[in-house]
Length: 223
Length: 223
DNA sequence: TAATCGGGGGTACTGAGTGCCACACCGAGG
DNA sequence: CCTCGGTGTGGCACTCAGTACCCCCGATTA
Image 1: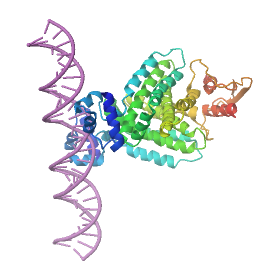
Image 2 (image 1 turned 90 degrees about the vertical axis):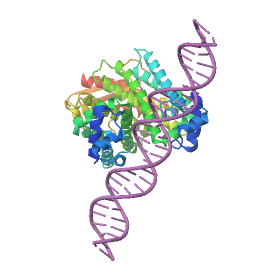
Image 3 (image 1 turned 90 degrees about the horizontal axis):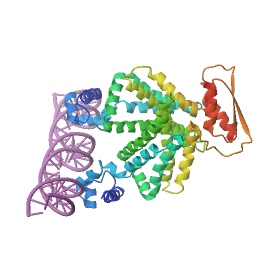
Protein backbone atom coordinates (compact mmCIF):
# COMPACT_ATOMS: atom_id res chain seq x y z
CA UNK A 1 0.00 0.00 0.00
CA UNK A 2 2.90 2.31 0.77
CA UNK A 3 4.38 1.17 -2.51
CA UNK A 4 1.16 1.84 -4.36
CA UNK A 5 1.05 5.36 -3.01
CA UNK A 6 4.69 6.00 -3.84
CA UNK A 7 4.26 4.69 -7.36
CA UNK A 8 1.13 6.71 -7.99
CA UNK A 9 2.74 9.82 -6.56
CA UNK A 10 5.82 9.57 -8.73
CA UNK A 11 3.80 8.91 -11.82
CA UNK A 12 1.81 12.08 -11.26
CA UNK A 13 4.74 14.17 -10.05
CA UNK A 14 6.86 13.41 -13.08
CA UNK A 15 3.89 13.90 -15.37
CA UNK A 16 2.39 17.18 -14.22
CA UNK A 17 4.75 18.34 -11.49
CA UNK A 18 4.75 18.34 -7.70
CA UNK A 19 2.74 21.46 -6.97
CA UNK A 20 0.25 20.66 -9.68
CA UNK A 21 -0.53 17.32 -8.07
CA UNK A 22 -2.86 17.19 -5.09
CA UNK A 23 -3.17 14.49 -2.50
CA UNK A 24 -6.59 13.72 -3.91
CA UNK A 25 -5.03 13.02 -7.29
CA UNK A 26 -2.59 10.59 -5.73
CA UNK A 27 -5.07 8.66 -3.64
CA UNK A 28 -7.62 8.43 -6.43
CA UNK A 29 -4.96 7.01 -8.75
CA UNK A 30 -3.77 4.60 -6.09
CA UNK A 31 -7.35 3.65 -5.30
CA UNK A 32 -7.17 4.34 -1.60
CA UNK A 33 -8.80 6.81 0.74
CA UNK A 34 -7.33 10.23 1.30
CA UNK A 35 -7.03 9.55 5.02
CA UNK A 36 -4.85 6.54 4.38
CA UNK A 37 -2.21 8.64 2.67
CA UNK A 38 -1.50 10.44 5.91
CA UNK A 39 -1.42 7.16 7.76
CA UNK A 40 1.70 6.24 5.82
CA UNK A 41 3.30 9.60 5.16
CA UNK A 42 3.27 12.61 7.44
CA UNK A 43 3.33 15.08 4.56
CA UNK A 44 3.13 15.35 0.81
CA UNK A 45 6.90 15.74 0.63
CA UNK A 46 7.62 12.61 2.63
CA UNK A 47 6.29 10.34 -0.11
CA UNK A 48 9.26 11.39 -2.22
CA UNK A 49 11.70 10.02 0.37
CA UNK A 50 10.01 6.81 1.46
CA UNK A 51 13.16 4.82 2.15
CA UNK A 52 15.15 7.22 4.29
CA UNK A 53 13.53 6.37 7.59
CA UNK A 54 14.63 2.78 7.29
CA UNK A 55 18.08 3.80 6.12
CA UNK A 56 18.54 6.10 9.08
CA UNK A 57 17.59 3.24 11.39
CA UNK A 58 20.13 1.03 9.61
CA UNK A 59 22.79 3.66 10.03
CA UNK A 60 22.05 4.05 13.72
CA UNK A 61 22.22 0.31 14.24
CA UNK A 62 25.44 0.07 12.22
CA UNK A 63 27.18 2.72 14.27
CA UNK A 64 25.93 1.28 17.54
CA UNK A 65 27.49 -2.02 16.59
CA UNK A 66 30.77 -0.51 15.42
CA UNK A 67 34.06 -1.56 16.97
CA UNK A 68 34.93 0.97 19.69
CA UNK A 69 38.62 0.42 18.94
CA UNK A 70 38.34 1.08 15.21
CA UNK A 71 38.90 4.33 13.37
CA UNK A 72 35.79 6.41 13.97
CA UNK A 73 36.22 8.36 10.74
CA UNK A 74 36.34 5.19 8.71
CA UNK A 75 33.26 3.90 10.46
CA UNK A 76 31.39 7.10 9.75
CA UNK A 77 32.42 6.87 6.11
CA UNK A 78 31.12 3.32 5.97
CA UNK A 79 27.88 4.53 7.50
CA UNK A 80 27.62 7.09 4.73
CA UNK A 81 28.18 4.32 2.22
CA UNK A 82 25.03 2.71 3.58
CA UNK A 83 23.08 5.65 2.24
CA UNK A 84 24.89 5.38 -1.04
CA UNK A 85 23.93 1.72 -1.34
CA UNK A 86 20.31 2.68 -0.96
CA UNK A 87 20.56 5.18 -3.80
CA UNK A 88 22.56 2.83 -5.99
CA UNK A 89 20.06 0.04 -5.36
CA UNK A 90 17.38 1.83 -7.38
CA UNK A 91 19.17 3.97 -9.94
CA UNK A 92 16.05 4.80 -11.94
CA UNK A 93 14.11 5.84 -8.87
CA UNK A 94 17.04 7.82 -7.49
CA UNK A 95 17.62 9.71 -10.70
CA UNK A 96 13.94 10.48 -11.09
CA UNK A 97 13.78 11.75 -7.55
CA UNK A 98 16.90 13.84 -8.11
CA UNK A 99 15.42 15.57 -11.14
CA UNK A 100 12.25 16.20 -9.22
CA UNK A 101 13.98 17.47 -6.09
CA UNK A 102 16.26 19.74 -8.08
CA UNK A 103 13.43 21.88 -9.35
CA UNK A 104 10.96 21.87 -6.46
CA UNK A 105 12.07 24.12 -3.59
CA UNK A 106 9.82 22.39 -1.09
CA UNK A 107 11.44 19.07 -1.85
CA UNK A 108 14.93 20.52 -1.67
CA UNK A 109 14.19 21.77 1.82
CA UNK A 110 12.75 18.45 2.83
CA UNK A 111 15.85 16.70 1.53
CA UNK A 112 17.95 19.04 3.66
CA UNK A 113 16.14 17.87 6.76
CA UNK A 114 16.72 14.25 5.76
CA UNK A 115 20.43 14.85 5.22
CA UNK A 116 20.57 16.76 8.46
CA UNK A 117 19.36 13.73 10.42
CA UNK A 118 22.08 11.60 8.87
CA UNK A 119 24.68 14.23 9.69
CA UNK A 120 23.58 14.49 13.29
CA UNK A 121 23.73 10.72 13.61
CA UNK A 122 27.28 10.66 12.31
CA UNK A 123 28.26 13.58 14.51
CA UNK A 124 26.76 11.85 17.53
CA UNK A 125 28.91 8.80 16.93
CA UNK A 126 32.05 10.88 16.52
CA UNK A 127 31.25 12.89 19.62
CA UNK A 128 31.22 9.82 21.82
CA UNK A 129 34.55 8.75 20.33
CA UNK A 130 36.15 12.13 20.71
CA UNK A 131 34.79 12.69 24.18
CA UNK A 132 38.31 12.67 25.58
CA UNK A 133 39.54 15.51 23.39
CA UNK A 134 38.98 19.05 24.51
CA UNK A 135 37.75 20.03 21.06
CA UNK A 136 35.99 16.72 20.55
CA UNK A 137 32.52 18.03 19.87
CA UNK A 138 33.79 20.60 17.39
CA UNK A 139 35.88 18.04 15.54
CA UNK A 140 32.92 15.68 15.46
CA UNK A 141 30.64 18.28 13.90
CA UNK A 142 33.21 19.39 11.36
CA UNK A 143 34.14 15.87 10.30
CA UNK A 144 30.52 14.79 10.04
CA UNK A 145 29.81 17.79 7.85
CA UNK A 146 32.82 17.04 5.69
CA UNK A 147 31.84 13.40 5.27
CA UNK A 148 28.32 14.31 4.29
CA UNK A 149 29.56 16.97 1.88
CA UNK A 150 31.98 14.58 0.20
CA UNK A 151 29.37 11.85 0.00
CA UNK A 152 26.79 14.18 -1.47
CA UNK A 153 29.28 15.60 -3.92
CA UNK A 154 29.95 12.21 -5.46
CA UNK A 155 26.34 11.12 -5.21
CA UNK A 156 25.05 14.23 -6.96
CA UNK A 157 27.60 13.94 -9.73
CA UNK A 158 26.35 10.43 -10.34
CA UNK A 159 22.72 11.44 -10.20
CA UNK A 160 23.34 14.33 -12.54
CA UNK A 161 24.89 11.95 -15.03
CA UNK A 162 21.72 9.90 -15.01
CA UNK A 163 23.14 6.99 -13.05
CA UNK A 164 26.09 6.21 -15.31
CA UNK A 165 29.42 5.03 -14.01
CA UNK A 166 30.58 3.57 -10.72
CA UNK A 167 29.18 5.55 -7.81
CA UNK A 168 30.94 3.42 -5.28
CA UNK A 169 34.35 4.32 -6.65
CA UNK A 170 33.45 7.98 -6.91
CA UNK A 171 32.32 8.12 -3.31
CA UNK A 172 35.40 6.23 -2.19
CA UNK A 173 37.57 8.79 -3.91
CA UNK A 174 35.66 11.70 -2.42
CA UNK A 175 35.69 10.25 1.07
CA UNK A 176 39.39 9.58 0.75
CA UNK A 177 39.97 13.31 0.84
CA UNK A 178 38.22 13.48 4.18
CA UNK A 179 39.91 10.41 5.63
CA UNK A 180 43.33 11.65 4.60
CA UNK A 181 42.81 14.92 6.39
CA UNK A 182 40.79 13.89 9.40
CA UNK A 183 41.38 10.18 9.77
CA UNK A 184 43.42 8.64 12.50
CA UNK A 185 42.99 9.00 16.18
CA UNK A 186 42.95 5.24 15.97
CA UNK A 187 45.96 3.34 14.86
CA UNK A 188 44.50 1.64 11.84
CA UNK A 189 46.89 2.61 9.10
CA UNK A 190 45.05 1.92 5.87
CA UNK A 191 47.94 3.78 4.41
CA UNK A 192 48.61 4.87 0.89
CA UNK A 193 50.75 2.96 -1.66
CA UNK A 194 54.25 2.02 -0.71
CA UNK A 195 57.73 3.19 -1.74
CA UNK A 196 58.63 3.18 1.91
CA UNK A 197 62.30 3.28 1.04
CA UNK A 198 62.08 7.03 0.57
CA UNK A 199 61.58 9.57 3.28
CA UNK A 200 60.40 13.12 3.30
CA UNK A 201 61.78 15.66 5.71
CA UNK A 202 59.65 18.64 6.49
CA UNK A 203 61.31 21.51 8.24
CA UNK A 204 59.18 24.22 9.73
CA UNK A 205 59.50 26.92 12.28
CA UNK A 206 57.58 26.57 15.47
CA UNK A 207 54.34 28.44 15.07
CA UNK A 208 54.07 27.72 11.41
CA UNK A 209 50.39 27.47 10.52
CA UNK A 210 49.36 23.92 10.00
CA UNK A 211 48.20 24.39 6.46
CA UNK A 212 51.62 25.47 5.34
CA UNK A 213 53.07 22.30 6.76
CA UNK A 214 50.43 20.23 5.07
CA UNK A 215 51.02 22.06 1.83
CA UNK A 216 54.72 21.39 1.95
CA UNK A 217 54.37 17.73 2.84
CA UNK A 218 51.69 17.25 0.25
CA UNK A 219 53.87 18.71 -2.44
CA UNK A 220 56.78 16.53 -1.39
CA UNK A 221 54.76 13.34 -1.19
CA UNK A 222 52.88 13.77 -4.40
CA UNK A 223 55.28 15.86 -6.46
CA UNK B 1 5.89 47.63 9.28
CA UNK B 2 8.15 44.61 8.84
CA UNK B 3 9.47 45.38 12.29
CA UNK B 4 5.97 45.64 13.71
CA UNK B 5 5.09 42.24 12.30
CA UNK B 6 8.29 40.67 13.58
CA UNK B 7 7.79 42.12 17.03
CA UNK B 8 4.18 41.02 17.23
CA UNK B 9 5.05 37.55 15.95
CA UNK B 10 7.80 37.03 18.50
CA UNK B 11 5.66 38.26 21.33
CA UNK B 12 2.97 35.73 20.48
CA UNK B 13 5.37 32.91 19.60
CA UNK B 14 7.21 33.13 22.89
CA UNK B 15 3.94 33.48 24.77
CA UNK B 16 1.75 30.71 23.39
CA UNK B 17 4.06 28.92 20.96
CA UNK B 18 4.56 28.85 17.23
CA UNK B 19 1.88 26.39 16.18
CA UNK B 20 -0.62 27.88 18.59
CA UNK B 21 -0.27 31.26 16.93
CA UNK B 22 -2.08 31.96 13.69
CA UNK B 23 -1.32 34.60 11.12
CA UNK B 24 -4.56 36.27 12.09
CA UNK B 25 -3.32 36.59 15.67
CA UNK B 26 -0.14 38.26 14.47
CA UNK B 27 -1.72 40.73 12.10
CA UNK B 28 -4.44 41.69 14.54
CA UNK B 29 -1.82 42.40 17.20
CA UNK B 30 0.30 44.34 14.74
CA UNK B 31 -2.77 46.19 13.54
CA UNK B 32 -2.31 45.39 9.86
CA UNK B 33 -4.21 43.39 7.33
CA UNK B 34 -3.66 39.72 6.90
CA UNK B 35 -2.71 40.17 3.26
CA UNK B 36 0.10 42.52 4.20
CA UNK B 37 1.84 39.82 6.20
CA UNK B 38 2.46 37.81 3.08
CA UNK B 39 3.67 40.90 1.29
CA UNK B 40 6.64 41.04 3.63
CA UNK B 41 7.18 37.38 4.44
CA UNK B 42 6.61 34.45 2.12
CA UNK B 43 5.65 32.11 4.94
CA UNK B 44 4.89 31.98 8.61
CA UNK B 45 8.37 30.60 9.27
CA UNK B 46 10.15 33.39 7.43
CA UNK B 47 9.13 35.98 10.01
CA UNK B 48 11.43 34.22 12.46
CA UNK B 49 14.44 34.84 10.21
CA UNK B 50 13.80 38.36 8.98
CA UNK B 51 17.43 39.44 8.70
CA UNK B 52 18.96 36.56 6.78
CA UNK B 53 18.03 37.75 3.32
CA UNK B 54 19.98 40.92 3.79
CA UNK B 55 22.86 39.05 5.37
CA UNK B 56 23.07 36.67 2.45
CA UNK B 57 23.19 39.64 0.09
CA UNK B 58 25.98 41.15 2.18
CA UNK B 59 27.90 37.90 2.06
CA UNK B 60 27.53 37.65 -1.70
CA UNK B 61 28.74 41.22 -2.12
CA UNK B 62 31.62 40.64 0.27
CA UNK B 63 32.85 37.59 -1.59
CA UNK B 64 32.40 39.24 -4.96
CA UNK B 65 34.66 42.06 -3.78
CA UNK B 66 37.26 39.76 -2.23
CA UNK B 67 40.85 39.91 -3.37
CA UNK B 68 41.36 37.18 -5.99
CA UNK B 69 44.93 36.77 -4.79
CA UNK B 70 44.05 36.26 -1.12
CA UNK B 71 43.53 33.02 0.73
CA UNK B 72 40.10 31.81 -0.28
CA UNK B 73 39.58 29.86 2.94
CA UNK B 74 40.29 32.94 5.02
CA UNK B 75 37.87 34.92 2.93
CA UNK B 76 35.18 32.35 3.35
CA UNK B 77 35.77 32.35 7.10
CA UNK B 78 35.44 36.12 7.13
CA UNK B 79 32.21 35.78 5.19
CA UNK B 80 30.95 33.41 7.86
CA UNK B 81 31.91 35.98 10.47
CA UNK B 82 29.48 38.34 8.75
CA UNK B 83 26.68 36.03 9.80
CA UNK B 84 28.07 35.88 13.29
CA UNK B 85 28.09 39.65 13.53
CA UNK B 86 24.41 39.68 12.69
CA UNK B 87 23.66 37.25 15.51
CA UNK B 88 25.91 39.04 17.95
CA UNK B 89 24.34 42.36 17.06
CA UNK B 90 21.05 41.40 18.73
CA UNK B 91 21.91 38.89 21.45
CA UNK B 92 18.45 38.95 23.02
CA UNK B 93 16.69 38.42 19.73
CA UNK B 94 19.13 35.72 18.69
CA UNK B 95 18.79 33.80 21.92
CA UNK B 96 15.01 34.03 21.83
CA UNK B 97 14.96 32.77 18.29
CA UNK B 98 17.32 29.96 19.20
CA UNK B 99 15.08 28.73 21.99
CA UNK B 100 12.10 28.91 19.68
CA UNK B 101 13.81 27.18 16.78
CA UNK B 102 15.15 24.44 19.01
CA UNK B 103 11.70 23.14 19.89
CA UNK B 104 9.71 23.75 16.71
CA UNK B 105 10.53 21.22 13.97
CA UNK B 106 9.16 23.43 11.22
CA UNK B 107 11.51 26.22 12.21
CA UNK B 108 14.47 23.88 12.46
CA UNK B 109 13.88 22.81 8.89
CA UNK B 110 13.52 26.39 7.75
CA UNK B 111 16.77 27.27 9.46
CA UNK B 112 18.44 24.45 7.58
CA UNK B 113 17.39 25.98 4.30
CA UNK B 114 18.78 29.33 5.41
CA UNK B 115 22.10 27.80 6.39
CA UNK B 116 22.14 25.87 3.16
CA UNK B 117 22.01 29.05 1.11
CA UNK B 118 24.99 30.44 3.02
CA UNK B 119 26.88 27.22 2.49
CA UNK B 120 26.19 27.19 -1.24
CA UNK B 121 27.36 30.78 -1.48
CA UNK B 122 30.63 29.94 0.25
CA UNK B 123 31.07 26.82 -1.86
CA UNK B 124 30.46 28.82 -5.02
CA UNK B 125 33.23 31.23 -4.12
CA UNK B 126 35.63 28.41 -3.34
CA UNK B 127 34.73 26.63 -6.57
CA UNK B 128 35.78 29.57 -8.69
CA UNK B 129 39.04 29.77 -6.78
CA UNK B 130 39.75 26.07 -7.01
CA UNK B 131 38.72 25.82 -10.64
CA UNK B 132 42.27 24.91 -11.61
CA UNK B 133 42.46 21.89 -9.33
CA UNK B 134 41.13 18.59 -10.57
CA UNK B 135 39.29 18.02 -7.29
CA UNK B 136 38.40 21.69 -6.93
CA UNK B 137 34.64 21.34 -6.71
CA UNK B 138 34.89 18.57 -4.15
CA UNK B 139 37.32 20.54 -2.01
CA UNK B 140 35.09 23.58 -2.26
CA UNK B 141 32.05 21.68 -1.05
CA UNK B 142 33.91 19.99 1.78
CA UNK B 143 35.58 23.15 3.00
CA UNK B 144 32.36 25.14 2.84
CA UNK B 145 30.63 22.45 4.87
CA UNK B 146 33.47 22.45 7.40
CA UNK B 147 33.41 26.22 7.76
CA UNK B 148 29.67 26.26 8.27
CA UNK B 149 29.87 23.42 10.78
CA UNK B 150 32.60 25.13 12.78
CA UNK B 151 30.79 28.45 12.70
CA UNK B 152 27.53 26.89 13.80
CA UNK B 153 29.24 24.92 16.53
CA UNK B 154 30.58 28.03 18.20
CA UNK B 155 27.44 30.02 17.52
CA UNK B 156 25.19 27.38 19.04
CA UNK B 157 27.35 27.07 22.12
CA UNK B 158 27.01 30.79 22.61
CA UNK B 159 23.28 30.76 22.01
CA UNK B 160 22.82 27.84 24.37
CA UNK B 161 24.65 29.78 27.09
CA UNK B 162 22.14 32.58 26.70
CA UNK B 163 24.51 34.97 24.98
CA UNK B 164 27.26 35.01 27.60
CA UNK B 165 30.90 35.26 26.73
CA UNK B 166 32.80 36.30 23.63
CA UNK B 167 31.29 34.69 20.52
CA UNK B 168 33.83 36.24 18.26
CA UNK B 169 36.71 34.52 20.04
CA UNK B 170 34.83 31.22 20.13
CA UNK B 171 34.16 31.33 16.41
CA UNK B 172 37.75 32.32 15.70
CA UNK B 173 38.95 29.32 17.64
CA UNK B 174 36.54 26.98 15.88
CA UNK B 175 37.39 28.33 12.43
CA UNK B 176 41.05 28.03 13.24
CA UNK B 177 40.65 24.28 13.15
CA UNK B 178 39.36 24.52 9.61
CA UNK B 179 41.94 27.03 8.43
CA UNK B 180 44.76 24.98 9.85
CA UNK B 181 43.66 21.91 7.97
CA UNK B 182 42.35 23.38 4.74
CA UNK B 183 43.91 26.82 4.49
CA UNK B 184 46.62 27.80 2.10
CA UNK B 185 46.64 27.75 -1.65
CA UNK B 186 47.27 31.43 -1.28
CA UNK B 187 50.37 32.86 0.25
CA UNK B 188 48.85 35.06 2.89
CA UNK B 189 50.64 33.93 6.01
CA UNK B 190 48.56 35.23 8.88
CA UNK B 191 50.70 32.89 10.84
CA UNK B 192 50.52 31.78 14.41
CA UNK B 193 52.58 33.30 17.30
CA UNK B 194 56.31 33.38 16.97
CA UNK B 195 59.19 31.43 18.52
CA UNK B 196 60.64 31.14 15.07
CA UNK B 197 64.01 30.32 16.51
CA UNK B 198 62.95 26.72 16.94
CA UNK B 199 62.30 24.29 14.14
CA UNK B 200 60.37 21.08 13.94
CA UNK B 201 61.51 18.25 11.74
CA UNK B 202 58.92 15.77 10.61
CA UNK B 203 60.20 12.61 9.08
CA UNK B 204 57.80 10.38 7.21
CA UNK B 205 57.96 7.63 4.67
CA UNK B 206 56.70 8.31 1.22
CA UNK B 207 53.10 7.20 1.06
CA UNK B 208 52.37 8.00 4.64
CA UNK B 209 48.75 9.06 4.93
CA UNK B 210 48.42 12.77 5.35
CA UNK B 211 46.62 12.61 8.67
CA UNK B 212 49.55 10.83 10.29
CA UNK B 213 51.84 13.62 9.18
CA UNK B 214 49.44 16.20 10.49
CA UNK B 215 49.12 14.33 13.74
CA UNK B 216 52.85 14.20 14.20
CA UNK B 217 53.46 17.83 13.34
CA UNK B 218 50.56 18.90 15.49
CA UNK B 219 51.96 17.06 18.47
CA UNK B 220 55.40 18.56 17.91
CA UNK B 221 54.16 22.11 17.46
CA UNK B 222 51.75 22.14 20.35
CA UNK B 223 53.33 19.65 22.71
C1' DT C 1 -24.41 -15.16 17.90
C1' DA C 2 -22.60 -11.26 20.35
C1' DA C 3 -18.63 -8.51 21.71
C1' DT C 4 -14.29 -6.56 20.73
C1' DC C 5 -10.63 -4.64 18.12
C1' DG C 6 -7.86 -2.80 14.32
C1' DG C 7 -7.17 -1.13 9.69
C1' DG C 8 -9.25 1.60 6.31
C1' DG C 9 -12.87 5.12 4.45
C1' DG C 10 -15.52 9.32 4.71
C1' DT C 11 -16.73 14.03 6.47
C1' DA C 12 -16.03 18.31 8.31
C1' DC C 13 -12.92 21.51 10.09
C1' DT C 14 -8.66 24.66 10.77
C1' DG C 15 -5.26 27.39 8.88
C1' DA C 16 -1.48 28.60 5.46
C1' DG C 17 -0.89 30.70 1.24
C1' DT C 18 -2.75 32.97 -3.31
C1' DG C 19 -5.45 35.73 -6.68
C1' DC C 20 -8.25 39.38 -7.35
C1' DC C 21 -10.35 43.68 -6.59
C1' DA C 22 -11.35 48.00 -4.19
C1' DC C 23 -9.70 51.81 -1.75
C1' DA C 24 -6.58 55.43 -0.03
C1' DC C 25 -2.70 58.20 -0.70
C1' DC C 26 0.39 61.11 -3.57
C1' DG C 27 2.93 63.60 -7.04
C1' DA C 28 2.33 65.21 -11.91
C1' DG C 29 -0.12 67.39 -15.31
C1' DG C 30 -4.32 69.33 -17.57
C1' DC D 1 -9.79 71.90 -9.04
C1' DC D 2 -10.06 67.69 -11.16
C1' DT D 3 -7.81 63.77 -13.30
C1' DC D 4 -4.51 60.21 -13.96
C1' DG D 5 -1.05 56.59 -12.99
C1' DG D 6 1.63 54.25 -9.55
C1' DT D 7 2.10 52.28 -5.07
C1' DG D 8 0.96 50.35 -0.75
C1' DT D 9 -2.84 48.32 1.90
C1' DG D 10 -7.21 45.97 3.35
C1' DG D 11 -10.74 42.69 2.34
C1' DC D 12 -12.84 38.71 0.26
C1' DA D 13 -12.95 34.25 -1.66
C1' DC D 14 -10.65 30.26 -2.93
C1' DT D 15 -7.43 25.99 -2.98
C1' DC D 16 -5.31 22.64 -0.59
C1' DA D 17 -2.44 20.38 3.18
C1' DG D 18 -3.14 18.36 7.39
C1' DT D 19 -6.15 16.83 11.49
C1' DA D 20 -10.02 15.25 14.47
C1' DC D 21 -13.77 12.45 14.64
C1' DC D 22 -16.80 8.91 13.47
C1' DC D 23 -18.26 4.92 10.79
C1' DC D 24 -17.72 0.53 8.45
C1' DC D 25 -16.05 -3.97 7.72
C1' DG D 26 -13.67 -8.13 8.62
C1' DA D 27 -11.31 -11.08 11.88
C1' DT D 28 -10.89 -13.10 16.34
C1' DT D 29 -12.81 -14.82 20.70
C1' DA D 30 -16.26 -16.20 24.24
